[in-house]
Image (tube, rainbow, N blue to C red; front, top):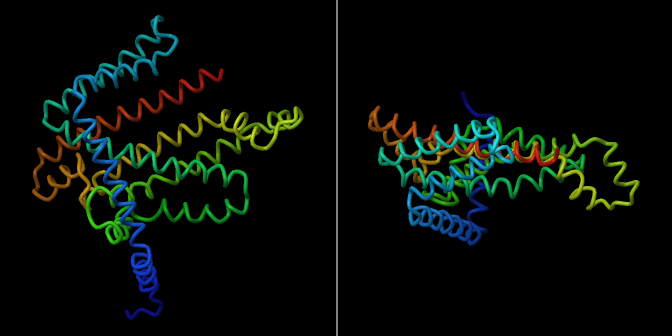
Length: 292
């Protein structure tokens, strides 16, 4: 069937114009992302693997057990995750995927950090401005429903191949939960508390930073959890544009029809996902206990 409306050609022309007129910007972004990812990878490889295991396990125990560390319930809650982290990381190390795991962790953490830096302020803006919410909401709907592979096309066009297009595609894919849950948390702050703040003479900025954001923090942290997990879910797709890590090994296993290689690297991703999920959930739980 012959095309009557060719929307794609106009999108292509727009992308070509952006690449042509703002090539200096894409180069600067590419250099910044590549340098950050390489620096974090280098840092992870300098630190002995056993020290990373100890640090992550200690953090997980502190967040899970908290002030109940000397109680039976707190001890059981903390020690279970610690054992999983120790045995999970040791399994990854003994399978020979430690370097790939650190590369994946760098990609996920940097992508999640960029998504949060962009998403949380936008979420605050949409919570305070109805017209901004009406404009941004359909954009977020498009970002969440668009197949993840589509994000790779402009990413490759602007940044060629490597870690940078993988990070950019991951940021776009993981951004919506940061915006939506930040907005939801702020809007769910009880109105009587806000009115009490105004009654005591608080300014708009004081209401936001001292009342709304602290009370919305558990919901915002749930958004942080979702951003990290969505970033991790993109590692295999990002490997198609040259991103390093466990995802590239999974992709290699698919190309070579190597079941063992694909299963082992996939298991490494699952272990890393569970660890990151439990730690970020623990941060949110700790925040709730602190507020109580």
